[in-house]
Image 1 (cartoon, rainbow, N blue to C red):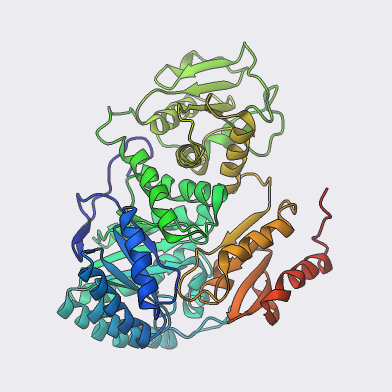
Image 2 (cartoon, rainbow, N blue to C red; image 1 turned 60 degrees about the vertical axis):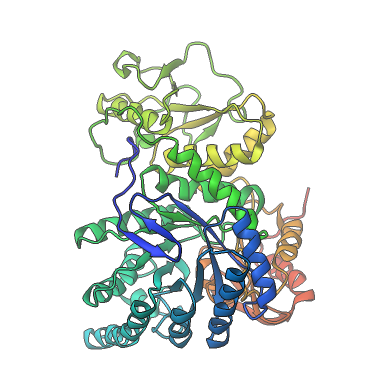
Length: 545
């Protein structure tokens, strides 16, 4: 894997229904229904819409045995309508549901954080070595019969860890860390290998793009060290909707795809499920266009972030976050260095910022290599990364620039970004750039929403609720607000949110301050005002201008 030269990561091939994931197969795109799994007709219709848009897998919520059985009928009805899209059961907290689903679906997703381990308390617990091992033995006893069923029915398994669903046992040893997320997966993978079960796909997700990228990279290293090569599913959980959801997904997923990591993806938008598919396809197509590109000479590795090597120069004095050209800096002075990424950085003087651009098909890789060579030469000039796009499609610009700038920013490159898109007005370009910087956790410019895409577990009208919460709070710059349809991943996934709005029961909402529940079971029609009242009581409210 390289951040400079694009090559797909070597992974094993896993059949899932009529498709194969991993190996030399295309990167698959998928979505998830958001209606009750027991409403068979609604699930069939929604699955058909996802498939018609190009979705290659459809996942359905599976709370219990009843839903697992219903999925079998949903799959049957789809086949009667000449739709052979693979069907995936999404299981949490219920091994019995997983056993039934193994007989009725093409793939079963289980979450190592809550498949066997007791429900999370988010409290510091201590486990002796013996207690810790006993919990792993419990996993083995529950997992082996499930794997045997999957073998019998040729059912694939996705081991899906979310940042917000680590068990107390894992948290006791590793904390809420990428290392804990990786170990949560590896425990299950080792048992699967003991049982000679290899129909496995892995996902390891977070709503924080920095955590998500770090964790997947660490997982790849951990698997490589144990000679495992399972395919990977990528996604940024609770990404939100509209522009914010598209940019955040592009930043996180795009960074990993650019390194050749990822065999299937889902863009988790708080919109209709079929809306996710074109976004995912545009993202994949943008990255794989780099296949077979002319090799880029890689710089010598160095420690730290290239951004941190730069020294103060006029226009970049004491800047603590990357700047945006057209917003922080109106025009580039004529005496600043303008360089192509294939030029010789030794010719650059030390007293001026550098603007670097590229027309290489893998411009992202070539620009990073150029900046790396600068660092190798001891050049500490601030670097402005200029990327040019010919499109007049705003959504496409969000996705492509989010993936490209996001990759370089998360890798530590760039003191400023310049989004050159002549067909798009400057105000829109500036907004996109600020969104990219916020998604990369480098600059806060607006309220951030961590909102789930919704599924059959959602306990209120999610899309309408998100619009209402945004309308009331979008002026609160710097706050993070989580909007979660149910309790499954809610409190954990919004761990770094300031406030949380979580479905507690039908028509009921619980409110959180960080991970602490501060009010339970509020009637939904009253919940938004209660949220505002809590924000005010904690001194975080500002009246709109």
